[in-house]
Picture (cartoon, protein in one colour):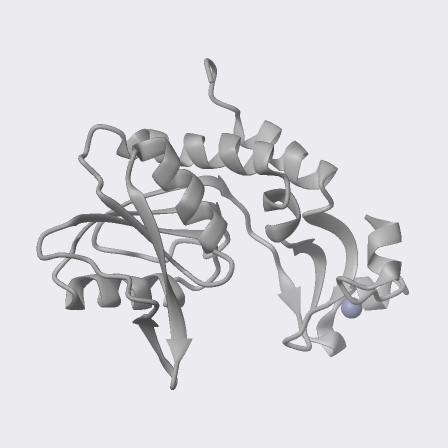
Length: 197
Ligand SMILES: [Zn+2]
């Protein structure tokens, strides 16, 4: 990759894959939104996953990253492709009995230089949980990376990078400007939402 993609070019890829939809959406939280983001739809194309994750890996090149860790499920492909770009290994944490944990025999050795990645950071909660798991294992967290940061500034004590920063406003139905305009409401993932994207 010679020239890094700009955030606009990256968003164009997301939109072309239907991973970023514009419309009037009912979210699983019950809130309404004018945009809907589903990173899996861009990551389903290995060529995009490879390109985007290589770009995400760039600022961490030369830091001796040995492990890339992500929360399942959304982070697995990102960890795998970022690890490929850095010549590191990739592993993922899973939620079990309420807490985030390493399963499947995954291990991080004392002092191993570990990068924590995600597809999307929304509140930063699961990223912090992965950081905690890495530190519990004795790993050294070198930084945090995500494809899309929609947190509006979640803070971490380590270096962090995102390919794109996106602020997606949510509204309770009674205060939704799109409802007031009478725009039809779609449930993301449904046929209706796909047709609109
Ligand atoms: Zn609405």
